[in-house]
Amino acid sequence: MEFLVEKIGMSRTVGKPSIPVTLLKVKTAKVCEVLEGGKALVAYHQGKSTNKSIVGQQKKYNLDKEYNKFATLEVSNTEAGDLDLSSLETAKRAKVSFKTKGRGFSGVMKRWNFQGGPAAHGSRFHRAPGSIGNREWPGRVQPGKKMAGHYGNEKVTVQNEIVSFDKEHGVLVLKGSIPGFNGAFGRLKIVG
Image 1 (tube, helix red, strand yellow):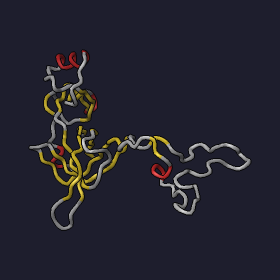
Image 2 (cartoon, rainbow, N blue to C red):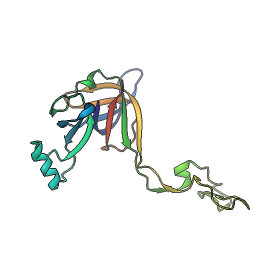
Image 3 (cartoon, one colour):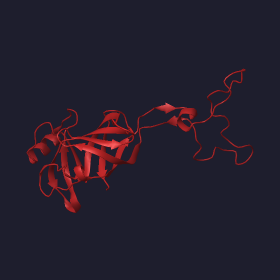
Image 4 (cartoon, rainbow, N blue to C red):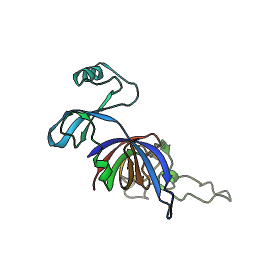
């Protein structure tokens, strides 16, 4: 089963030993149409954007105006209606996919953990990448060379243990950390 989730933030359990946990809010969603292979078209609320195609889908599936986004998920529902969350209560492990924090254009020390040069005594080599080529042959920069560039904002999937699920508030507690900023939007898939 798959669910759309929003990252609330990190916390820890009270007790011995204390476990670091990540809190996720499970998005309320409506199943519009059940497709083949256990998949379904699901509508959910995200922001305020709307256009004619979204209005057409809302009329087609008789949805409120707040349901302005659509996704295809693996669900346990057999007919249209509210998304079934009962499988989260018994689940033990989950795969979570989020985009990592975007860090923009970063240098080699931040992006690839390069050591850099000596800080003092006028070396004039501090945070630069150093030599990037070869001497006479092949006389070019090798493909895949670690250099400065865009860092972060890429999809990462991690597996975590489920600690608890509060069905009333839709809050899922997972052991450990999850990529992305607080308020980030991602997908959760039950694996065990």
